[in-house]
Length: 152
Image (cartoon, rainbow, N blue to C red; front, top):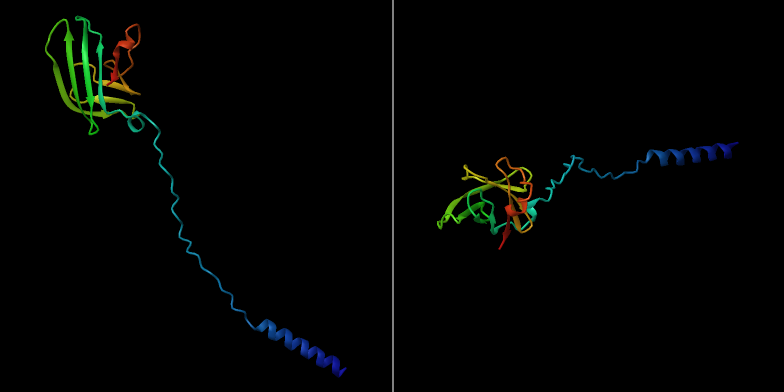
């Protein structure tokens, strides 16, 4: 009985010594500051950001009371422009207008700021500008292709 009692005491002491020894547990505290979720702002491709739009465009647009309007429009990277027009068969004088242009919200059309008495909007395409009507819409019909200025 004594040996069973000593065995019990020995096992109990061992058990108590093992459980009472607190093993130091290293815990790494991670800074749980919420990382801001980065949402990339992607801009859709449009004429303004994906085409090489600066340069000089020219063509002859229709005219109601002359042979045509010889048109040259130079667009600069700083959003300035020079528009030169000549009424063929009516005048030998070049009319020149300078100013700045802005882009519409979609980034596909420019608006010439100083033109108030005629069409001042052009749809910007690959190496071409399409003159729009007074309300900013594409011209349709048989003469529609005559309103396209091509890049030099």
